[in-house]
Length: 235
Image 1 (cartoon, helix red, strand yellow):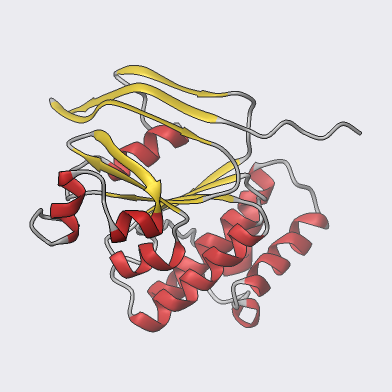
Image 2 (cartoon, rainbow, N blue to C red; image 1 turned 180 degrees about the horizontal axis):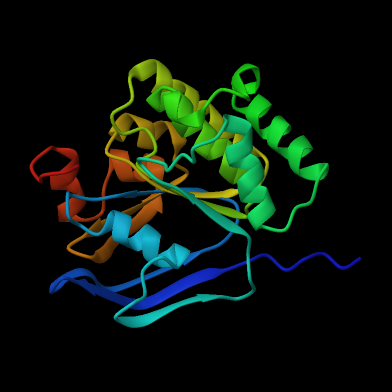
């Protein structure tokens, strides 16, 4: 069997106007398999809009988002939506929507819960779980779909340090299995721990893209340097 061609996701001259505000302004970026990318920038720079547009939830006002071949993708939000059913049923539902039949559906759901450390609460109602547990469930739900690229929009915002560490462990495990991670975060320490590369955006434009160590040690742009010094507002 021929090896499958790696996906390439390309955004070119991407502009998104929402409510009369130019959230993205001619942004161009290309994403290929293999790296963990963290998108940083000041509050209002367009980080979340970029992820939602790449994932297909927001239509560009102009410019293009194109895949060189279709790729399995998933997205986890800062406040994930939990269905009114058990933890495992939340995952089974996502698998059913994607055409997975029983008994494979239950097997995959159980395995995903175990991977994120929630196997012992599989039948607990999802909506009574703690914030950290709900976020791990959301990651398990995405992981069960075996995405080639996973978008994460501030996945640990408002979580305590213990819950944050658990989420970071799960993200690292998903990446180790070959899923391309693209995420936003307001936590610079987290960006240092998880990122292979940083895409820094400012006023809707990709100002800088570089290896994470180089970005934090010697940012190339004045905007990024001010941001790291805390002289630009950031979320």
